[in-house]
Image 1: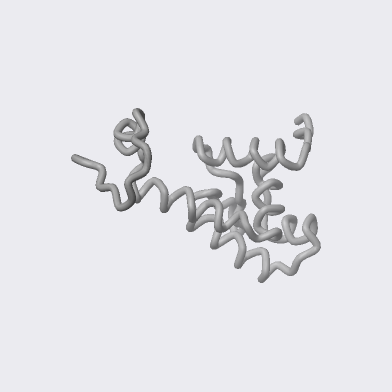
Image 2: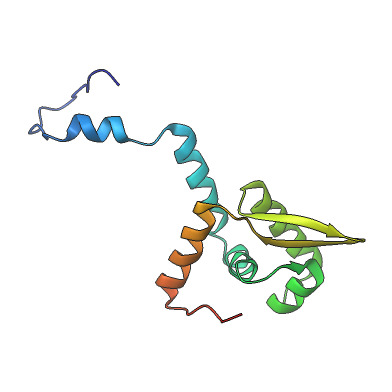
Length: 122
């Protein structure tokens, strides 16, 4: 960004140009916003938290969360499209787990910090 255009004559912030240069790209902001939007749903948040600790199939996720398998499948599709979880096939069964990315690790820790949850030991 070459120059900051001011609409109103506010006091000049000495770090303003550095802030603008360091601002994340629109693509980065879109990725983070989509991840946070997906975790804004309580059911998806519970599924995501569970999958941060284990790899599970739809039937076991449904049993753990008290949801139907079709509802769990719907939420899994959304979490997967946001890049928060990954899947692998074992025979006829699909298994899901949290993606191994920085954003997933940070979101997992943030959820636990906010809720004051301690991770179960494996």
